[in-house]
Image 1 (tube, helix red, strand yellow):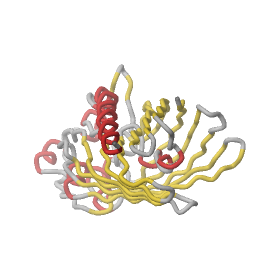
Image 2 (cartoon, helix red, strand yellow):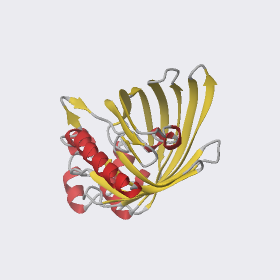
Image 3 (cartoon, helix red, strand yellow):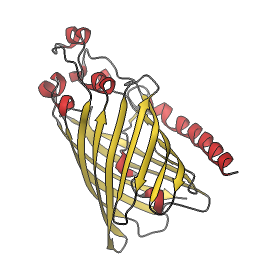
Image 4 (cartoon, helix red, strand yellow):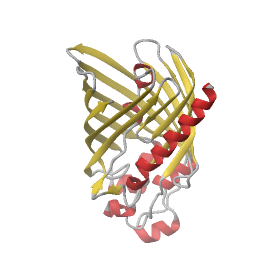
Length: 283
């Protein structure tokens, strides 16, 4: 029975995820005239214990983020940040574009399989990208494991693109923690290191001979390695039962070939900053 519930829940949440993200994932992540951003992994850290319910739980919200126009850019843009989460007991969780199905779930350890939809990079997003073409949207299929020793959450997630976007393999090692301040306020933060394969690095940071001729950038062959290291810190207010408000600032440093390539070195920056604020309502 549990397996049937897992399968049914995964199918339902998968359909909902597709309906939710498909309109925003095309035409440069625009829908109804709005430009949509993508939330990051650390938004989810800790929720897989704190949010366990007896049945179905849904959270809806919206926010605004200010982030680089593309990964490695030195100019910034404000975007709408949708907030959507669906949770069924300790079996399944959908947070924005990340779907997780739990195989093991207890007080100190969770693991399972996941699918994550990642928006692509569009040439018209910035004059810097002229001649480099588009990087399509990706669907990363893989798994995750998280350990909670009590004071923090430490985790690993990984996924292989199966949709033909970046064609690569990506792994994130991360940790997060929250410090209650009283009165519904809490300080939260985290850190993350990302490793990416040749295909991912080449699609996002490499320059082929054809792209070189079209963009004016020299040919560059990007290889696998550490792609970035990031830290973030924020404040959360959750005094009321149904409402939660968050704001955070984050800094990411591109590494290896993600930093030392013609696009970033001549037209962008390896230093990436993000600010976001959001509110959500829990049903």
